[in-house]
Image (cartoon, rainbow, N blue to C red; front, top):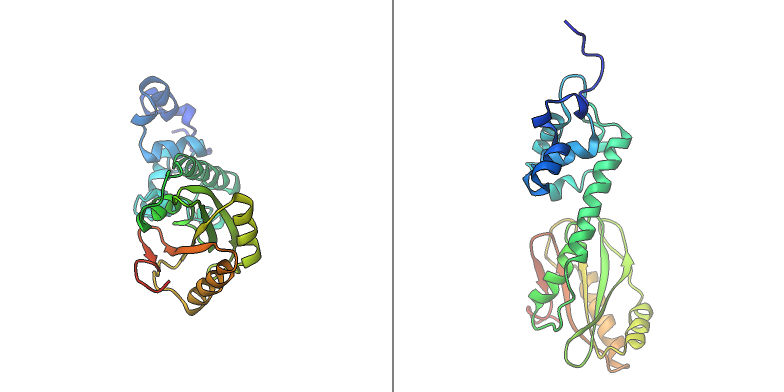
Length: 232
Protein backbone atom coordinates (compact mmCIF):
# COMPACT_ATOMS: atom_id res chain seq x y z
CA UNK A 1 0.00 0.00 0.00
CA UNK A 2 1.32 3.42 -0.93
CA UNK A 3 2.19 5.46 2.14
CA UNK A 4 0.47 8.82 2.50
CA UNK A 5 3.47 11.11 2.80
CA UNK A 6 2.08 14.27 1.28
CA UNK A 7 -1.04 16.38 1.53
CA UNK A 8 -3.98 15.75 -0.74
CA UNK A 9 -3.50 18.11 -3.67
CA UNK A 10 -6.47 19.12 -5.80
CA UNK A 11 -4.53 17.87 -8.84
CA UNK A 12 -4.73 14.30 -7.48
CA UNK A 13 -8.50 14.26 -7.10
CA UNK A 14 -10.99 12.66 -9.44
CA UNK A 15 -11.80 15.16 -12.20
CA UNK A 16 -15.43 15.32 -11.05
CA UNK A 17 -14.27 16.32 -7.56
CA UNK A 18 -12.00 19.17 -8.59
CA UNK A 19 -13.58 22.50 -7.68
CA UNK A 20 -11.46 24.43 -10.18
CA UNK A 21 -12.65 22.27 -13.05
CA UNK A 22 -16.19 22.41 -11.67
CA UNK A 23 -16.05 26.21 -11.73
CA UNK A 24 -14.85 26.21 -15.34
CA UNK A 25 -17.37 23.60 -16.53
CA UNK A 26 -20.44 24.56 -14.52
CA UNK A 27 -19.87 28.11 -13.27
CA UNK A 28 -18.95 29.72 -9.96
CA UNK A 29 -22.48 29.54 -8.58
CA UNK A 30 -22.34 25.74 -8.50
CA UNK A 31 -19.48 25.69 -5.97
CA UNK A 32 -20.17 25.06 -2.32
CA UNK A 33 -18.57 27.29 0.32
CA UNK A 34 -16.15 24.48 1.17
CA UNK A 35 -15.13 24.08 -2.48
CA UNK A 36 -14.41 27.80 -2.77
CA UNK A 37 -12.22 27.71 0.34
CA UNK A 38 -10.53 24.56 -1.01
CA UNK A 39 -9.53 26.50 -4.12
CA UNK A 40 -8.02 29.20 -1.89
CA UNK A 41 -5.92 26.77 0.16
CA UNK A 42 -5.04 24.37 -2.68
CA UNK A 43 -4.39 21.27 -0.57
CA UNK A 44 -5.39 19.59 2.66
CA UNK A 45 -3.29 17.48 5.00
CA UNK A 46 -2.20 13.84 5.09
CA UNK A 47 -5.57 12.61 6.30
CA UNK A 48 -8.05 14.80 4.44
CA UNK A 49 -8.52 16.64 1.18
CA UNK A 50 -8.73 20.42 0.87
CA UNK A 51 -12.53 20.18 0.64
CA UNK A 52 -12.75 17.97 3.73
CA UNK A 53 -10.48 20.32 5.64
CA UNK A 54 -12.53 23.30 4.45
CA UNK A 55 -15.72 21.60 5.61
CA UNK A 56 -14.19 21.09 9.04
CA UNK A 57 -13.14 24.74 9.25
CA UNK A 58 -16.63 25.87 8.24
CA UNK A 59 -18.20 23.51 10.74
CA UNK A 60 -16.23 25.20 13.53
CA UNK A 61 -18.06 28.48 12.79
CA UNK A 62 -21.46 26.86 12.19
CA UNK A 63 -21.00 27.31 8.43
CA UNK A 64 -21.24 31.10 8.76
CA UNK A 65 -19.00 32.94 6.29
CA UNK A 66 -19.18 36.16 8.33
CA UNK A 67 -17.94 34.27 11.39
CA UNK A 68 -15.14 32.70 9.36
CA UNK A 69 -14.08 36.16 8.25
CA UNK A 70 -13.52 37.14 11.88
CA UNK A 71 -10.99 34.38 12.58
CA UNK A 72 -7.38 35.50 12.96
CA UNK A 73 -4.35 33.95 11.29
CA UNK A 74 -3.44 32.20 14.54
CA UNK A 75 -6.94 30.78 14.96
CA UNK A 76 -6.94 29.38 11.41
CA UNK A 77 -3.48 27.88 11.90
CA UNK A 78 -4.85 25.68 14.69
CA UNK A 79 -6.36 23.47 11.97
CA UNK A 80 -3.97 20.75 10.81
CA UNK A 81 -2.91 21.55 7.26
CA UNK A 82 -3.40 25.31 7.56
CA UNK A 83 -0.11 27.14 7.73
CA UNK A 84 0.44 30.87 7.68
CA UNK A 85 0.27 31.14 3.88
CA UNK A 86 -3.06 29.27 3.67
CA UNK A 87 -4.50 31.25 6.57
CA UNK A 88 -3.55 34.48 4.83
CA UNK A 89 -5.13 33.22 1.59
CA UNK A 90 -8.43 32.54 3.38
CA UNK A 91 -8.44 35.91 5.13
CA UNK A 92 -7.51 37.77 1.95
CA UNK A 93 -10.21 36.00 -0.05
CA UNK A 94 -12.90 36.81 2.49
CA UNK A 95 -11.73 40.41 2.82
CA UNK A 96 -11.97 40.84 -0.95
CA UNK A 97 -15.54 39.53 -0.79
CA UNK A 98 -16.36 41.96 2.02
CA UNK A 99 -14.99 44.88 0.00
CA UNK A 100 -16.97 43.80 -3.03
CA UNK A 101 -20.13 43.74 -0.90
CA UNK A 102 -19.31 47.20 0.45
CA UNK A 103 -18.61 48.55 -3.04
CA UNK A 104 -21.91 47.15 -4.27
CA UNK A 105 -23.88 49.22 -1.78
CA UNK A 106 -24.73 52.41 -3.61
CA UNK A 107 -25.03 55.61 -1.66
CA UNK A 108 -28.74 56.16 -1.33
CA UNK A 109 -29.91 59.33 -3.05
CA UNK A 110 -31.72 60.46 0.06
CA UNK A 111 -31.85 59.48 3.72
CA UNK A 112 -35.47 59.10 4.76
CA UNK A 113 -35.11 57.13 7.99
CA UNK A 114 -32.59 55.48 10.30
CA UNK A 115 -32.95 52.18 8.41
CA UNK A 116 -31.44 53.84 5.33
CA UNK A 117 -28.36 54.69 7.37
CA UNK A 118 -28.12 51.16 8.76
CA UNK A 119 -28.41 49.61 5.29
CA UNK A 120 -25.63 51.89 4.08
CA UNK A 121 -23.19 51.31 6.94
CA UNK A 122 -23.84 47.76 8.12
CA UNK A 123 -21.73 46.23 5.30
CA UNK A 124 -18.94 48.65 6.20
CA UNK A 125 -18.74 48.40 10.01
CA UNK A 126 -21.33 45.88 11.17
CA UNK A 127 -19.03 42.87 11.54
CA UNK A 128 -15.75 44.52 12.53
CA UNK A 129 -13.89 43.37 15.64
CA UNK A 130 -12.88 46.94 16.52
CA UNK A 131 -14.75 50.23 16.71
CA UNK A 132 -14.85 52.70 13.85
CA UNK A 133 -16.58 56.07 13.71
CA UNK A 134 -18.17 57.21 10.45
CA UNK A 135 -19.99 60.33 9.32
CA UNK A 136 -22.57 60.80 6.56
CA UNK A 137 -22.50 64.33 5.17
CA UNK A 138 -25.87 65.52 3.84
CA UNK A 139 -27.23 68.51 1.95
CA UNK A 140 -30.51 70.35 2.58
CA UNK A 141 -32.50 67.61 0.84
CA UNK A 142 -30.89 64.91 3.03
CA UNK A 143 -28.99 63.55 0.05
CA UNK A 144 -25.68 61.93 0.91
CA UNK A 145 -22.76 64.01 -0.28
CA UNK A 146 -20.12 61.72 1.19
CA UNK A 147 -19.56 59.01 3.77
CA UNK A 148 -16.27 59.10 5.63
CA UNK A 149 -14.38 57.21 8.33
CA UNK A 150 -13.08 59.73 10.86
CA UNK A 151 -11.73 57.48 13.60
CA UNK A 152 -10.56 53.91 14.26
CA UNK A 153 -10.32 52.53 17.78
CA UNK A 154 -10.04 49.32 19.73
CA UNK A 155 -12.63 46.80 20.84
CA UNK A 156 -14.27 49.10 23.38
CA UNK A 157 -14.00 52.64 22.07
CA UNK A 158 -12.67 55.21 19.64
CA UNK A 159 -11.70 58.87 19.98
CA UNK A 160 -13.36 61.45 17.76
CA UNK A 161 -12.05 64.95 17.01
CA UNK A 162 -14.92 67.36 16.33
CA UNK A 163 -12.58 69.56 14.26
CA UNK A 164 -11.99 66.73 11.78
CA UNK A 165 -15.73 66.02 11.56
CA UNK A 166 -16.65 69.61 10.77
CA UNK A 167 -13.66 70.44 8.61
CA UNK A 168 -14.91 67.81 6.19
CA UNK A 169 -18.48 69.08 6.53
CA UNK A 170 -17.35 72.52 5.39
CA UNK A 171 -15.34 71.03 2.52
CA UNK A 172 -18.38 69.11 1.25
CA UNK A 173 -20.80 71.97 1.83
CA UNK A 174 -22.91 69.81 4.14
CA UNK A 175 -25.80 71.28 6.10
CA UNK A 176 -26.37 68.17 8.20
CA UNK A 177 -24.50 65.12 9.39
CA UNK A 178 -25.39 61.67 10.67
CA UNK A 179 -22.79 60.08 12.90
CA UNK A 180 -22.42 56.35 13.47
CA UNK A 181 -20.15 53.84 15.10
CA UNK A 182 -20.18 50.09 15.66
CA UNK A 183 -20.17 48.01 18.84
CA UNK A 184 -18.11 44.83 18.30
CA UNK A 185 -19.68 43.40 21.46
CA UNK A 186 -23.09 43.37 19.77
CA UNK A 187 -24.61 45.58 22.47
CA UNK A 188 -26.99 48.26 21.24
CA UNK A 189 -27.02 50.25 24.47
CA UNK A 190 -25.36 53.67 24.18
CA UNK A 191 -22.67 54.35 26.76
CA UNK A 192 -22.27 57.61 28.65
CA UNK A 193 -19.36 58.47 26.38
CA UNK A 194 -21.59 57.85 23.33
CA UNK A 195 -24.14 60.31 24.72
CA UNK A 196 -21.49 62.86 25.71
CA UNK A 197 -19.90 62.71 22.26
CA UNK A 198 -23.28 63.25 20.59
CA UNK A 199 -23.90 66.39 22.63
CA UNK A 200 -20.37 67.64 22.01
CA UNK A 201 -20.80 67.31 18.25
CA UNK A 202 -24.26 68.89 18.38
CA UNK A 203 -22.91 71.93 20.18
CA UNK A 204 -19.95 72.24 17.82
CA UNK A 205 -22.23 72.01 14.79
CA UNK A 206 -24.69 74.58 16.09
CA UNK A 207 -22.14 77.37 15.74
CA UNK A 208 -21.65 76.38 12.09
CA UNK A 209 -25.36 75.88 11.33
CA UNK A 210 -24.69 72.20 10.68
CA UNK A 211 -27.21 69.88 12.34
CA UNK A 212 -26.51 66.46 13.83
CA UNK A 213 -29.55 64.59 12.51
CA UNK A 214 -28.91 61.22 14.15
CA UNK A 215 -26.36 58.99 15.82
CA UNK A 216 -26.50 55.27 15.10
CA UNK A 217 -24.90 52.41 16.97
CA UNK A 218 -24.46 49.63 14.42
CA UNK A 219 -24.00 45.91 14.98
CA UNK A 220 -23.97 42.99 12.58
CA UNK A 221 -27.72 42.41 12.80
CA UNK A 222 -29.34 45.57 14.16
CA UNK A 223 -28.90 49.19 15.20
CA UNK A 224 -29.82 51.83 17.75
CA UNK A 225 -30.92 55.30 16.62
CA UNK A 226 -30.61 58.27 18.98
CA UNK A 227 -33.20 60.16 16.93
CA UNK A 228 -35.71 57.29 16.94
CA UNK A 229 -35.35 57.00 20.72
CA UNK A 230 -35.68 60.79 21.20
CA UNK A 231 -32.37 61.16 23.02
CA UNK A 232 -30.53 63.14 20.37
